[in-house]
Amino acid sequence: MSDELRECPCGGYGTLYSGRRFLLECHKCGRETKAYATKAEAVVAWNIGILEDLLAAKDKRIAELEAALWHCLDNGIEAQDALWRDAALAALRASGGSNAQATVL
Ligand SMILES: [Zn+2]
Image 1 (cartoon, rainbow, N blue to C red):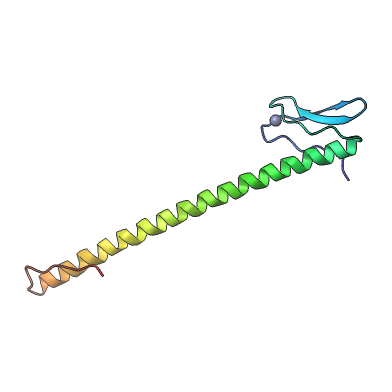
Image 2 (cartoon, rainbow, N blue to C red):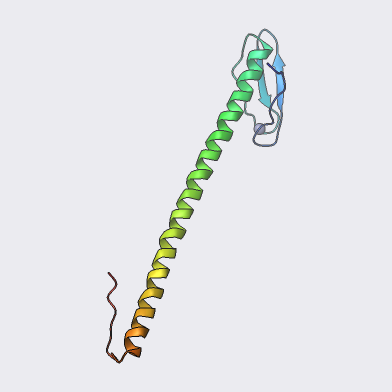
């Protein structure tokens, strides 16, 4: 297992504090691990915590993009319906029905 620390999502870096136990704390935002018996355990906990946060942020972003996509699709379909309605009205009027009205089904 690598001892390489992942960068904190805030852009800061983890500082290792050691004594009887080991913990890592971000110098910038204060994010920290629990205290562990070994440096390797603290490093793994730090990296896993950051990966979990990154995954949660990506899941949130995917949900936002899905909502935006559905919003666009819904509005796009409504706009397309209006175009079809206007085209149908124009065709009816052109065929002699001056009082023609379209019914959107
Ligand atoms: Zn941080």
